[in-house]
Image (cartoon, rainbow, N blue to C red):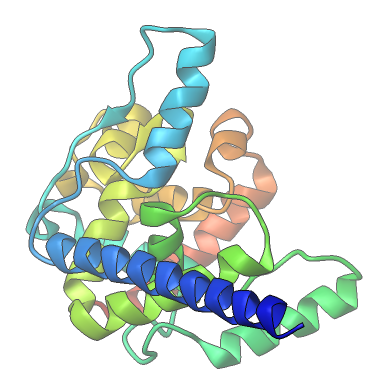
Amino acid sequence: MKSALRWFWRGLLALVLLVLLWQAWLFTQVMWWRTNDPAASSFMRLRLAELRRENPDAVLQHRWVPYEQISIHLKRAVVAAEDDRFMEHRGFDWEGIQRAIERNQQRGRTAAGGSTISQQLAKNLFLSPSRSYLRKGQEAVLTVMIETTWSKQRILEVYLNVAEWGDGVFGAEAAARRYFGLSASRLGPGEAARLAVMLPAPRRYERQFGPRLAAHAERVRARMHYSRIP
């Protein structure tokens, strides 16, 4: 009995050490990307692997652009559509989470998540689209790491450069050229609002941008000048 208990505690200690080493490795990545631009995110690698199962020559549409070369309209539109308290919170919008819970209860299904831009960035950079409590827990830890060590400007810059905007389309520059034939710096309020409302389901919305989504884009356009951005 004592021997079994001893092995149990040793195994538990080994597991804790492995988890701590994993978190330390993730933290080194977070610190590196604070000043160095990531060439690809976890979501980008996963999507490229999916595309290459169908076409071995598939490539992603992606080009990194600095924060200053992204239209102020797109920055404001994305904040208005995805996280209107981006400049106020420290990674978690508790009011937004509460509203999402209430909406989901009213609809009887999970329709709104309440994730902030920082949470979405943590997931896109490091994790996968799978849904589990373990993944959400890791997302929360990464969000704290990012919010603690990065500026709000860096968070928004990286998010806009790695966000998915269509089938194999990642980042603001590729999205602007794919849908409007413009550089990200030249997007106007209308184009910016249309891109912002695509973010929750970009592959679906690139195929079907109907009247309901167009109306949502107009609502975002009407209020995005109130958005606070870095």
